[in-house]
Structures are given as C-alpha cells and as structure tokens.
Length: 359
Image (tube, rainbow, N blue to C red; front, side):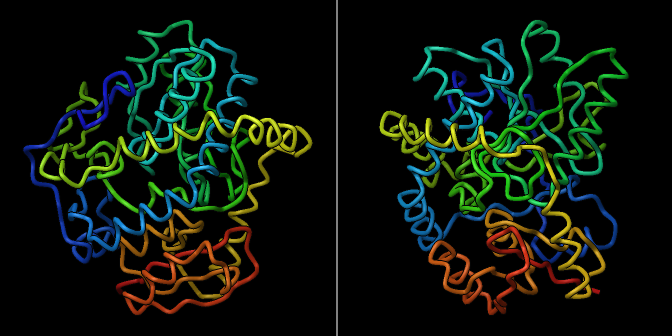
C-alpha cells in the first residue's frame, strides 16, 4: 500500500481503497460532536492548492536541517536505550515519514537495516492488536520502538500505554510502550529529539506527504475481527505526491549535521527527561480561560494547530508570541479563514488551535 518503497516501510493495514468513507469537514465535525467515532469515516482528501504546496516547500527548506538534527538525535537516543536489535513501529499516518527517516538514518550512519512497520492506533479504541501480534511473531527477539512525529496533549502517548498494557496482559508479552518523537513540547515522553515546538513540515499536508495513505479506519462494517485496521490509497493524487521528496530532502542533510547531533545529545544528557505532562496542565488552563467544555477541542502545538486550520472548523488560534516568524504559515492560514489570532503567553507550546463547538 502507498507510494513508499517496501524497503522503507511495510503498512500493516487493510486496503479499503474501493470503499467510500469520506465526508465533508462540516459533516464530520457534526458527526464527531454528536458521538460518532472519528475513525469510522474519513475527511475528503483534496488536491493541495498551489499555496499549500508552496507553504510546504518553503517550510521544508526552512526546517530541513533542524529536522535532520532532531531525527539523528532521537535515533541515537533509541540506540542508547534499546540497543541495535530494534524494530520501528510508526503510528500511522503522521508517524510513518518519521519512522522512515529514522530507518534511513540508521542505515546511512551505521549500515544498520532495521525493520519498520506502520500500524494504526485510534484514540479511545486502542492499537491494532492483529498488527502487533504479527510483529511479535515475526520479530520475537527485537525490541519494539514506537515512533510518532510530535506530542500535543499526550492523548496518543496515554492511549499507547493503556493499549500495550492490555495487549501484554492478554497475550502474555512484554512489549515496551515507549514512544519516540521528534518534538515533545507536551513533555509526554523520555525519547525525543527536542522539546521545542517547531513545525514538522509533513503537518502541512495530508496523504500527499504520507505515502498517499489515508487516516486509519476502524469501522465494523469493513474491518473484521481478524483484519488489520483499514486505510485507503489515493492513487489519483500521484501527480501531487511529495512523500519521497520530503524523505530525500531531510536525508540529504544527515551528512552535514553530525556535529549538531552530538551537541544536542550532550545537551539532552543534562536535561531531566522525565515526563512532567506540563502540556496537559497548560491545556486545562486554556479550557478554563476560554470556557471550553470539551478538551478534544483544544489542539496544542504547531503541528496540531496547522491541522485544525487545514482540516477542522477553527474557532480561535492562540499564539505565544505574535512576532514569531516561524508561525508565518499559521498567520496566513488564519487570515485566509477569518479566524482570530490571540496572543496567549501562558503555555509551553508556540501556538494552539481551538475547534469551534457546533452546538
């Protein structure tokens, strides 16, 4: 499935390309806010506009070096913690390009060819147990390392911990639930490249930077008890696909950032890496300050804020600093959609998107 090479990733997903699951942004928002689970349907995958593609290429050019340093740093941390017998398990779909970058880093730096799978995890419904059993059976002696792009509130980190506790208990296994991310502004994990909240450019696009694969689907109508969770492959978007371009641009930086990676690792040695979940405390304060009932309507961090502006119905955007040049794309998208931007200094994130309640 998808436009990545099998050498880069194997998707443990059921192909639902022939099934119509898409609903408009408004239909999805109404359904989710009325109790339908978000994983039972999909957003419509639009062809990215020239402006979005320009935004993506601009941010990739701006952050490629920073990305390469974060990838190298977190990959080195994984080796320190887990050793060389590892299997990367990225959380589809935002984690997939990050897992590929880590796999490429191991190969380029250590000639270490680690297996890499992409599996589905669904907030409120757990991880794909059939996929995890497949990995456990095929790699009984390897240490699993889960991979994602960034942390927001830490909802997926918590979901992963609970899901793997259930899975390990059910199948008498001892798979470690630790999550490795490039950026951990929510202070939710111990294995990260940085805790700075910066834009990972893959957040600017949807399937066209994720191997043309949709969000994952868990809908009983199409997914049986023995199936992997599902996803669609959008072959009609092949002309717009920048998935492999994104990988190649960041990988080409690895050779030039070895020194910065070493410096970042030294810096991390001195840091207290224990998760404090500082992010969730900030979110609760935002909930109070703006009278937001549903915590799921608060999407912190530059990646999540970008997604709110691209895919949801936004109400307000909070930014820590109105003069932050790195948030150029946030200001542009908010202006396009007539969404108010408010300076809010009391948070560890550089920005936060708030979804509009429809009731």
